[in-house]
Length: 115
Image (cartoon, rainbow, N blue to C red; front, side, top):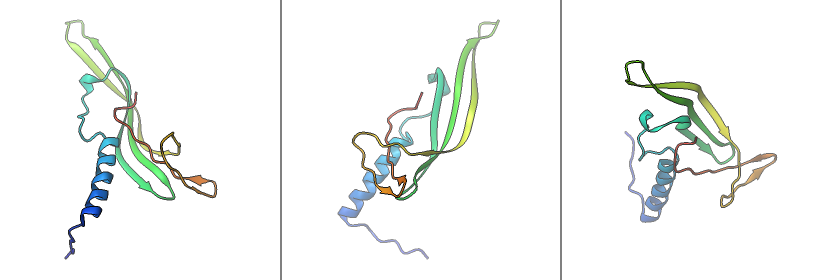
């Protein structure tokens, strides 16, 4: 079977920082509620990062249109415009990057749904 080793406190601290970073980027603590969105949105569903390749993420992007029916009921339409993989290659202030030839490494953080 798989051998499991308890991490040292330094290793656990690093693991926790990585988890917190991914949790923030994928918005684990914020439910995706169509009723709270009005207009365009972009949601990251999955994240793949590597030292050399940068960051790839599976994204769902769409537009939420709200209205009412002739009977007065609230109508919500979710139009998905894109669903697939995207690659991110942007350096922002406060981030660190490395170059391998013409390829750079990018790490980005977010705290909300992109609109």
